[in-house]
View 1 (cartoon, rainbow, N blue to C red):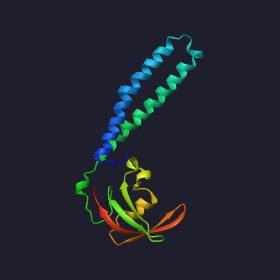
View 2 (view 1 turned 60 degrees about the horizontal axis):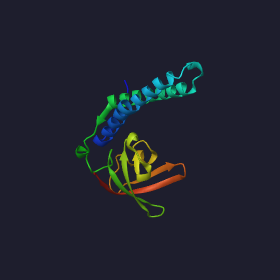
View 3 (view 1 turned 120 degrees about the horizontal axis):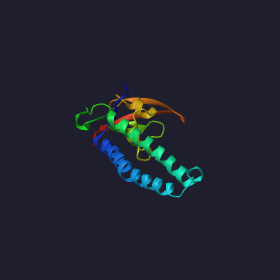
View 4 (view 1 turned 135 degrees about the vertical axis):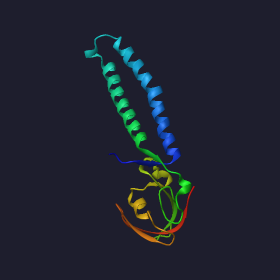
Length: 158
């Protein structure tokens, strides 16, 4: 049995939108391209045909992956998640105890991470260390650059 994937409603809608785009926009374009290149003659020496067929294989693989992922998605109602500790979809204000810098992280499933916007994976070293922690707790996180100690200052939900 494959593992469920937990996503917010927005995360699920994003995957559904991507699947729809691939199936109803990109797939028909590729089919038309393959048909056009087939009309060019000898397929054994037709590089455009082979490129289009390879692109089709890649596209079909991506569609299958998205369909599989969507079949395993479990939507999470963030309003029902307790706010007293760090859980999935929590926004966590932490203070780096080495330099006093405060950082606001959002702990998200791996498919919804955006490191540039401090949306970190629940499976990342920092996300995993913060799970289950409460305001006032201190966590030590081993990261490639060394060890970081954070104090949890505030936990909120969007």
